Amino acid sequence: MSTLGIVSRNPETNEMRGSIALLGRRNPVGIEIVPNPAKASERQPDFRIYSGANELGAGWIKVSRETGKPYISLRIFHPQIAQWPIYANLGRAAGQDDDDVLAVIVNEAA
Image (cartoon, rainbow, N blue to C red):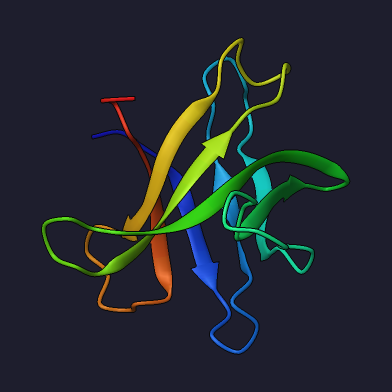
């Protein structure tokens, strides 16, 4: 599993801020993952992903078949990042005891 970056969640707002490192970029890209206030159906994302004013993708709350616990599945796409979408999940960051510090982990099976 490859980790693209780390985000920290604000437990009061459920917003996440952090950065992801991308190949070909010298500096990490700052991102915000924010709840989608306009969600009107199950098919719409639970979260939107931004870097500044640019929307980079979306996130959906899913439930693990193995553990029954919820997690957030991400789809990151912007033509300046890659030619194709990057699929990732948010999970506990390595070496962290804080449930509000999450790793952006590439889903290599997608």
